[in-house]
View: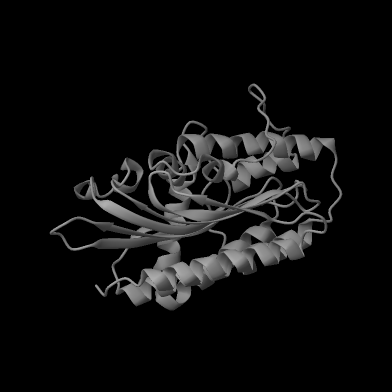
Length: 303
């Protein structure tokens, strides 16, 4: 494997954060991102957290960059690589979570990241991870097909087998086992990617990162002006509760951040500003909410 070029990865991630923030602000008439810079308490480095709140299009959105250097790889990062437990590490990434105000606009999530693990006397080990997934509250097949078409296009230059593989991995990863349902309609998820030379792995990461906005913005533009009422808003808040459950119970990124002593406010920016839970609620048969449960919250071949 070629030697990793961390400076080039960092430069791309910082530019990606800038690009995503600028594009989201173009869809938002009133709110703008605020920026917090922070230092990593568990070692060296830090990050640049950008949060948009109280908007007309986006109730809350976070676009985080971090580059941290730690003394011991946390369990969440070494679970699939137990031989690396105790290695020092560098972790770089951009994480995006957008919670729209209009219930007809889906929540979206994207993440691209790079890890380097090192120990005296051993060759350094590196890998890439990331992906993007969509969490709709109301079912629009057109949106789901577009989202997955962009996911397929991101993978296409690197092999026809990648989209089915990483789409399936996404369906399996973003699954609430205690509910028996997916978090949304999926997309792409990959981790521990180092099977190719560094340059090709990095090119794939860039392709995934670069396809997030073309996948999400057309959906935002189509749906943000649809009128909605109390029923739709209440259902959105109820479904956001599932998002909270997944992120706090299963999400490896959340666990890694907390276990590694990262900045709590930046880690938990993925949570929606408002969510709700109702005891043993069931959707009305034949309703749009029922269609979401029947046809969208299960693995499906959208293409």
